[in-house]
Image (cartoon, rainbow, N blue to C red; front, top):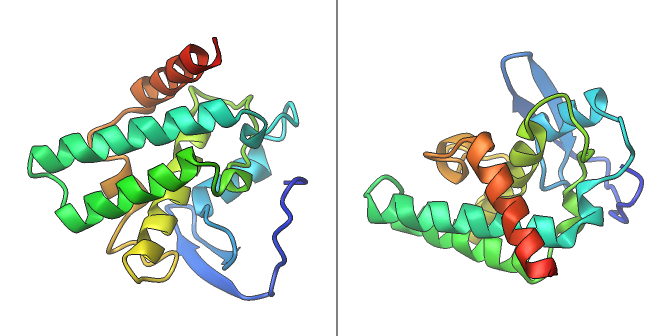
Length: 166
């Protein structure tokens, strides 16, 4: 994670997954799944933040999914609004330095998808007045990734990025 210009305070938040607990610097908008990807997939050294159009495409996909899930009654309107606002900020260039996973991974883009879900969820939490990592209010999987598959979100975001680039 060489690009980040984040000044670290030394404060952390604790996050948990099936493997265990991990301390995440409070300044980071990404979470435990992204940290695990950073530990395990340093393959090409080409990070997501090198591809702003792709990041914006991911934000488009996540905002559209949140709106569709809201229309279906699956997502609370306040959570929807916060997710859409976070995605709009990302599309406007905010938090791109938080998209830190390697473009080459050992899978179909799951680490990329989770990096986006975590950044969006944590920014949405702040928008709603909660602390990053307080996932009971907006969870990366249960809310931001609701009704989605990496195998759909990733290639759709890539197609949006290519379309915008040409």
